[in-house]
Amino acid sequence: MGLKDKQNQNLMHLIRRVHGIAAQPDIDRHRHSQDRIGVLLGTEKNVTYTDVDVDGMACEWVRVQRAHMKKYVILYCHGGGYSTGSTVYARTLTTKLAESTSMDVFCFNYRLAPEFPYPAACEDAMKAWDHLMQYGYGARDVILAGDSAGGNLALSLTLRLKQQKRLLPRGMVLLSPWTDLTASGKSHITRREIDPVLDEAYLKRMTDHYASGQDLTDPLISPLFGDFEGFPPIYIQVGDNEVLLSDATVLHKKLIKANVPVRLDVYKGMWHVFQMSPFKTAYEAMDKNAEFIYDICR
Image (cartoon, rainbow, N blue to C red; front, top):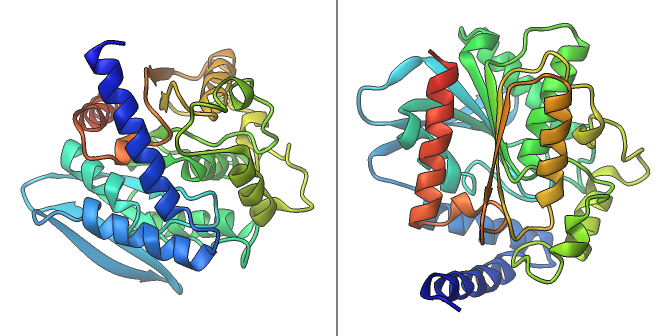
């Protein structure tokens, strides 16, 4: 085993321990643990965090304190299996996005399951989208981004906009997107032993919280089964060591088939939403997200 592999294994062991601390079976403790991680690892002095109330929904603007691009905005959907996560936890990503792109990032606290199962999160995502439209942005000024369940939500929001024959966002950035709640991908088996963050019991619990009694092949629940014709350019990042690898690779194939401009980067040795972690590969991945966003905003 080379030095790099050994370092990577040690890092994955640390991630497994940190995630174990955060992923409490008690859902309220799990949510509080995540917020503490967000404050600790995500909050930066040179970035402002401004609370906004959108019709009873708590939202947050994340802005760098320097001259930056105002024409475009990133609408960010946080992850957490639809049962946990928040704008504060998402700062581990939204702060990096704001810093790497020099764009404002708008994140929102959608209602969480099991208290508020499907379609609550989808309705709240549309509320956030409509707020930006009323705020003065056009659809083509918005880059939609999300991690894990937030990647699912970003896709499902775009499918809903398409259903309503509305204009779609300029582009999308998806980090380890959870696209298939039926868990049909091969990586659920092939990566089962090495994924340091997710396991089948956790995913099943999150699925039951969010979509119990629903048809899990409904594209608004599992966007993998959606019709992507006419979708904007999409950039996907995923770790090679995660059970959701297939959720990204199969989505990539379906997008190509639908003639959507799409790019997929599989990061060797990386885990679910590794971009949250404060280390070199995470910052390099965020720089690649920024490059993609600059390309589509030309």
